[in-house]
Image 1 (cartoon, rainbow, N blue to C red):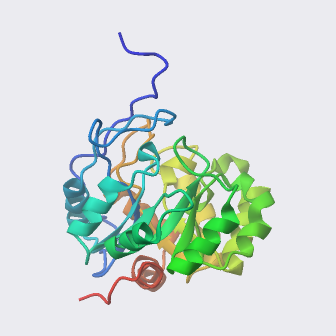
Image 2 (image 1 turned 30 degrees about the vertical axis):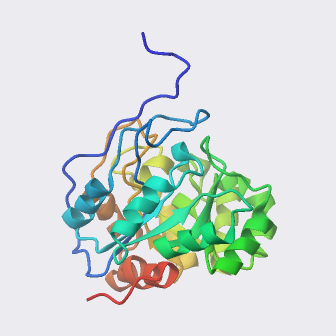
Length: 295
């Protein structure tokens, strides 16, 4: 009999990803948010995790990039593996030209371990207060100093309503700040929500924002049209600091499983202008993650 107290199992992604139908993905496009996941016992799960995912190997992620026409990808350390970045690092090292990584680490790592992370392709650190297994904001300034020393940025998974009391601290960081899933909050709160307006202000003042996770913020469900005015407001606040993320393999999502191609089609509504959309997919992401010029 299943353990009722165990973290809920979540489904895997659509096994047949396809590209968008509303625009052509440009050469050099970057998927700025995805995860790879190993399975226990080789890659243990955190006991305090919020969900139990299926395996998501690097080969499946690269196949998704190929199927959708994306050139590069950014792997974000998944919360269920805590600070054990081994699976992500293995995939990064196997594809150094195509992938970059965002790690989750404790403070106080030896210099040689930090150097190994950087050599593997890590370009930032993630703080996460939404899912068990993440690292919170108690030591925000210390992580900012570490990121500054390593030439990294900081990435935040946080509900927009919690941004308001943190905004001044985020604004003082000595490194770029990147907000996941444009605030990861239900759009039913409205455009005038104080947390969302804080996000827009942070973006206008220099923060980066990931245009991703529509299904996490939508209340109406597919095709997530209720997210359009919010994504447009964020993009209009910082068109040069928005990047796009698929959020593959869509962990902790229990509604209808979307195809990445459908999410890319939504990007055509979020950023209707082709030149501006290409900046999101290419120029902005190349600048933030250090990818080379498209071939």
